[in-house]
Image (tube, rainbow, N blue to C red; front, top):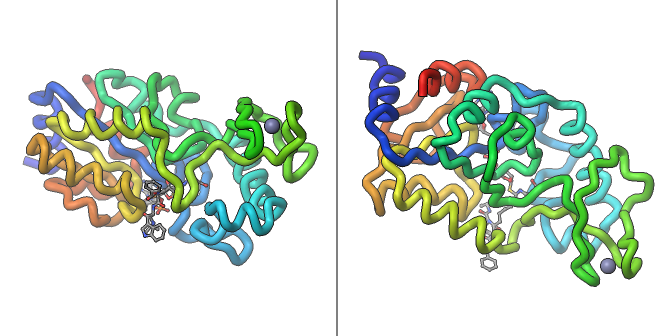
Length: 237
Ligand code: BV8
Ligand code: ZN
């Protein structure tokens, strides 16, 4: 029996399925991953720019990076992997991605544990708005309420994850029969720890879909592009 058939059997028998996705699921939509080829922006790494310190030091530079990413995402379309998950509303979807492509593909109630590229939040008064303007007319953008700086509504390194979203994601993982880890290097915590929590709390079967194994500690590894593997894996409900 192939690994695909084995895992399809696990999914058929499962009552609660959770999927955690990372940048790899959006790669086939043309969005560069963080740590793969083409993931760099100019000479910077995500860890250099996605931090409160970098924003405090040079908000314009950080915003140039986000404005560039917003432009890429605005031109991107969900791919077959996003569609395969959108066709399975029975699967609880947790994503580290901030691109919004799961929601655009039709998924509902997506747990965006690292926030959302399209939300702008004022560092002064906390006013938040969804803004899909690309490119933004002024960098860094200013709050229309108090004039202070707006920041991207994403979670930076050293920042805690949105409390309610994170507790929903953790509870889902700890009750999972099958935990799918899709297109992530499993390097960024605490999201990368969800698979281990699923296994420890619920003896979940962990299944990884990736081009190469990550540190997710999967019980089954389905090698390949998410846009090819997921439709085959999830078809038929
Ligand atoms: C926290 C949002 C504490 C922004 C992101 C030292 C100092 C400070 C902190 C730490 C430290 N050591 C550890 C930490 C914790 C830190 C961390 O984990 N650091 C890592 C680098 C070691 N974590 C944090 O800081 C987190 N917060 O811990 O808070 C705290 C607690 C209480 C109170 C206060 C504070 C916050 C982490 C969130 C950071 N924000 N993004 C933005 O996007 O701009 S992280 C960023 O990395 C993205 O969200 C991204 O999703 C995430 C993970 O990357 P991946 O998605 O996995 O992408 P990657 O490129 O790495 O991998 C792609 C994969 O896809 C590869 O495996 C590839 O093979 C595969 N692939 C490619 N193509 C395909 C494919 N697979 C399938 N099909 C394909 N076609
Ligand atoms: Zn404000």
